[in-house]
Image (cartoon, rainbow, N blue to C red; front, side, top):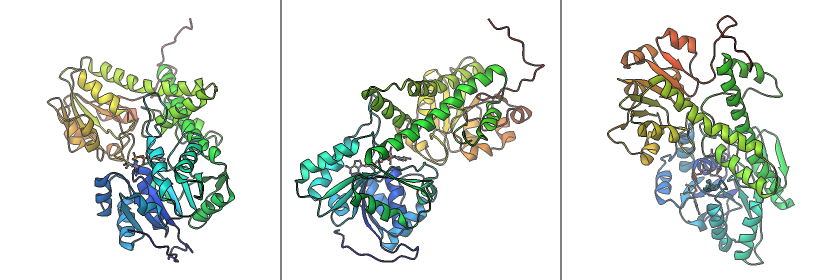
Length: 464
Ligand SMILES: NC(=O)c1ccc[n+]([C@@H]2O[C@H](COP(=O)([O-])OP(=O)(O)OC[C@H]3O[C@@H](n4cnc5c(N)ncnc54)[C@H](O)[C@@H]3O)[C@@H](O)[C@H]2O)c1
């Protein structure tokens, strides 16, 4: 499968395509691969997982991501995209090699860079002329230094290459749109040659600001962005707890605050907190980098502590609503860390489902896309079942617990659901409904930070 250099003009206006090798076909790598192919580039994507490569080569997406199927099929058919397990197919003859492999958290909170290091070792002996090697994986600042060091050590002195950073800001659930229409592109390069190659790659087809900077700066931008997003969420969740005490609705507070353009309304949704494969891990990795460098990041540790406490807060609400849990039937709606993805990494459901189960509840779980993934971690048993719909989860339930903000849950037939439940109790970790509407629909409805007190209804509390 050796690639011959072939440049052409595509209908989308790209005057010259690039030949790209992409390591890793997970959430970031697969979207990167199909989107660059869609933009007219010739892409060889490599994964070490043979099953994943076989399915993708067959046109079957291995992740749930809106819009992915069409781009995968179209670009396989056009011949601009192919998948392989052989590293040389992706490296030999390519202009740019992207690293999109995983950087999962280690037990001590640091990023595990084994996959990145393995790719560096793999690429080194395959270099055939100048090669631009680009980190797209999210990595701690100065990782590129070690990638460069590893390749230089193993490739010998005459190999020509640069290591650059081009962090990826796509969000699962809207990843294809985010990739094709980003709000900014960050290019970190320490040589003119690397910078101009990357600028060239992004010159056509993208209409957003490009931040061209040093490699280490680019690495830090990505982790700082995720730490800031995490901070916003923990901040509003802290306010949410105060809202509950004061009888105030946090959603209204967030709206009143977020309309200030200096603050912005995004990521001000109170609820169960942040999860997923990026925010918790990138926050943690930034904390460890900072502490290693003697910088006080107690504020970020607090962001993390507030987030972890959200799961306890929700479980306390379930306890209070049901009093005793053994033999109570609890329908769980949603296990993905957010809507429109099947990703459960870092999802609050991973903390909540085993706790409900070990407390003796009979748990019935429904998720439109992620049930298969969670079943691998928690196989069904006599008190844990995976059902095919929200209606099935609600049938005979003593309570429904909402853990993911799927649109499907927002548009449930509430009357139908209520009539199926043994007791119409909903504990909503995502604040999907208006409390007044839920009461009117006959539910006992618990959400997070949604007080509705007026001056006449709030008991006066004497400060002590
Ligand atoms: N998931 C996201 O939304 C997202 C967004 C932006 C950035 N990122 C970053 O992108 C990186 C990848 O994230 P992901 O969610 O796609 O991870 P992932 O775990 O879904 O995918 C990683 C893939 O790399 C493959 N792989 C591992 N070692 C390999 C090797 N030596 N050669 C070839 N393939 C190899 C694995 O088999 C796997 O398919 C991470 O650093 C992540 O932080 C992810």
